[in-house]
Length: 271
Length: 259
Image 1 (tube, helix red, strand yellow):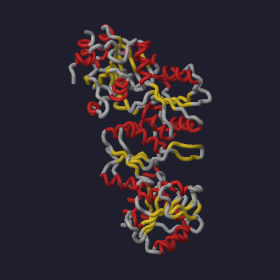
Image 2 (image 1 turned 45 degrees about the horizontal axis):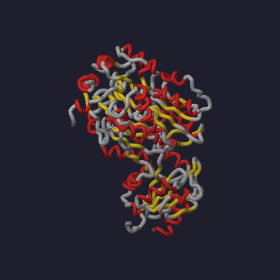
Image 3 (image 1 turned 45 degrees about the vertical axis):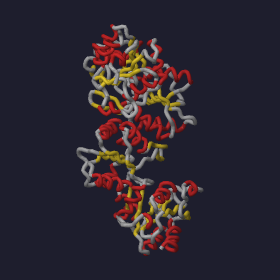
Image 4 (image 1 turned 60 degrees about the horizontal axis):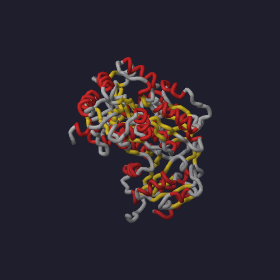
């Protein structure tokens, strides 16, 4: 593999995944990953542009940013690309009224949306909200629709919390797809539109200028690369050693954590 | 294709073939007696995930069928056999009423997951537990992968969607043991010592009973009772060896033409 200097040359903007890169969530709010608070601060002080690109869908942006700030992170709502607000826009544009299979914590992001007489189902990371009863309700809504529409906020397989790995929305999305014989639309990583909207907000081109840092080899790294960006895989969060031998995705670099990634970026990208 | 040998075993589906809910198919009890007078082994096979063999036996005895417990083979039996074969300790996500069929199987410190139709277990915490076991290398065994079933209050999700969820999350494939899987029929025949080419299956579900059996080398007889709908026999290729009115007709044919 080429030297870091070559691999990171020309980077002007950095997209940061949140869960597994900045912090690990948990019932008590979770905990920052070692070195990440300082790493974000250093990035912000540099000439590199920074934006947070997350699939977090259990909490509203306000809640998430509040939590991270309390942990010491320099982050504000306007710097975050999150799937719930993106989905709200899509629902409004298409005149869709959703049955929401979501965690209560994120309902506020859909506050302006008409949910009466639903003509689609929106599924997010509902966590404990993924009871058999709630899944069955969503299933029945879809089965009664002439044109069933299922919108999924991300399609991750699992993520890391302080207590261990947790089933993510993707698994439950697949369950409904199988039950109804349909295919979901995904809003969030790895959808290219999602990455592109984040890059647009940051004012940076994918090709040659942007780099994504994430813990999900397929959703973060693979997805970013397919948009023409470079991407680094961190060994924190949901990372498992087998990810370094993924049959389809080869990251532009593997680093222990965000702190190491930032060290390398500040050494090589800002020359 | 192997040449057909003399018929030695008959597999009979239960619900829809021998009985419809709590009523026997007319003439079925007597037809079973006639079948037994020939020298063939008989096995009763079903995809139930909620009823133990004892439950099934009780119902059949009430309907005056002459059947013994060791002649019944269910998808739960298939799951149990696989667990024993692989020598694993399963986390059992099955209906409480199915637990008797797993008596004697070690379930502490599980290294496998068995999933049947068990809505009361399909909530987040338990599925997450199963997920973590599977990620650590535990085997995933599905009793079957039905998408949904009919309840009195409407459609309800079957085990299939939840098996799919776990397969996706762990990037693995479940071993499905119920009809129409080949292993189901092979396992059902194992106790008889007969080869598939020496056996015939009688059932009302064209795809799961007849199609599944013929896929493994058996002859399949489709009966027009239970869930049968007109032209079902056109839905599989090759078509059923025989399509006839009901179980008694199937037995007549066997006695006249296959022995």
